[in-house]
Image (cartoon, rainbow, N blue to C red; front, side):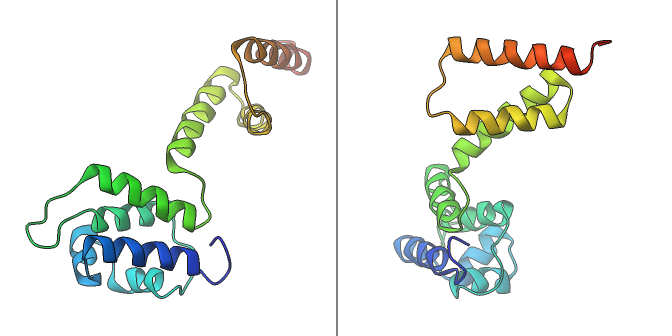
Length: 150
């Protein structure tokens, strides 16, 4: 969690539950999560939940208790808040990074090279098109030097 006590995540969950007027039972019904999983988040107990668990928790928080109407926009905001409180990055940025990692893997056919490239990208504040071209050219030349037969 963002800190070892899990308090930021518990606070974020409590704020959303209060805002939406939902109980643990409501969230359990809408999300399909086990009651103890939701209670661990609510009570700041246990280990940091996985991102998939946070997404399901956000679905539960974004579903109206009575009629069961689901609100996608609320789910996205709740998921972002829960992810940040749990110590993960912004999900929209992480989703984009995952796509970039996949694209890099297919470009270089090497998980190690893609990882080095992604780490480099993380260290750059702003990357313009010219910088990207130069970095790709540099990586291509390194690839050619390390694998001259390809």
